[in-house]
Image 1: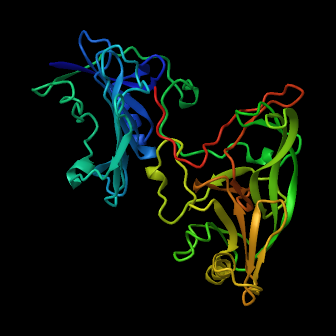
Image 2: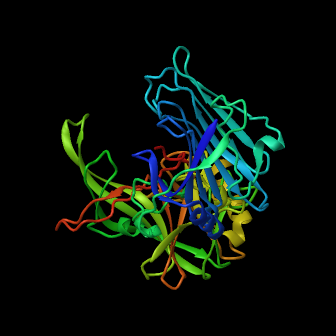
Length: 446
C-alpha cells in the first residue's frame, strides 16, 4: 500500500484539510525550532486522511488523529515530551466506536473509551457505553511501561501509527505529497478555525469582576451588572507566604497552593453582581445580588496579567485543553491563610468548627451575609486564617494578578464559573472570554 505524506503549517478543523502546505524541508526546520506543524497521511483514492499528526515541541506535545472512510475521527492520542527527550508519554487517548456509517462524528450516543495516564504510573480508563444499559465504568488501565511510553522517532522516520486500525498487514510505502507552497506564512495569521496546541484554562476578565458598571452574563441570566466590591475584613500574613486551600482536606499535609507576598495585612473583598429575574414562587420579578469571586488585595495597582497558581505536583507540560489546577474541596470550603502558621491556624479551625469547643481563644464564627465563615488567629506569629464558602465541591483554580513589573497585586478565587463579558453600554466591543468552572475540560474536537 502506498501512503502519501504531506506537511502543512496547520490543520483546519472545519475544512478537515491542511492549511498552508509546506515542504518536508520547511517542516524539518519548524520541527528543529519547536514550531508547530502537521503531517497528513493519505491513501490514493481515499478522500479522508488515514491519520494526522500534530506537532509542537515547544509545547511538549504531539497529537495523533485517526480518521475512518467517512471522514470521522475515530481515535485521538495526546503524547507529551517530558524530561527524557528520547520518549513520549501517551498522556491521553479517546476512541470513538461508531455504531454505523450514518452516525455523526462525536455523536453523543457514540460509545467511547478514554484513557488518562500520568508519568508516575497512575491512570484511569473510562468506558462510556450507550444503548441498553448505558452508563460508564472507570477502571485502572493496567498497562505495561512500553504501553504507556513510546520511543520518539526522528523527523521523517515516524511510522503510520494507525496501520493496524486500517487493517494494513504489510508496512506501507511512503511517498512525498506534491507541494504547492503559498506565500511565506507567518504564525500570527493562522485562522481561528485551525488546530492549536492544548492550552490550560485561561483567567478571563477578572479585573472587570471588581469594576462597578461592567456588564456580564453567566449564560442563564442574560445581563448582570457588577456592583461595588464588598470589603469584608483583613488578613494578616506576617510570614510572607499566603496559603489558599481547603483547611479540612489539607490540614494534615499542608496547603496545596501557596503564593509568596510581601509580609503584611491585606484587605479581603467580594466581587458582586446584581441582576433581575423572574421568581417563580413569588410570581414576580426580583433583583438579586450574588458573589462571583473573592480577592485578597495585595496592592491598589491594577493587575496587568493573571496567572494560575500551581501546586508542588502540578506540571503544566501535562495539562490537556482547558485543564485547571488549584485546591480541592469536598466540603465546599476554601481559605486564605498565613502559610507560615498553617498548622496552629488549622488546628484552631478544627477545634472550633469540627470539635465545637466553646469560648475558644483564637477562633471566631463570622456572623454576616458574606461568604466568609470562620476566622482563626495565631497569637505567637500573628498569622490569620479566613474560610470562605464555594458553590460546590471539586477543584477551584487560584488566580494571581501581577503588575507590569511582575509584582503580586491580588489573589482571586472564583466561586462561580467566570461569566462572559458583555459590551459596554455605548456599544464598545469587549472580548468575550469564558472561564472553565471547577472541573477539568477535555481536548476540543474538530
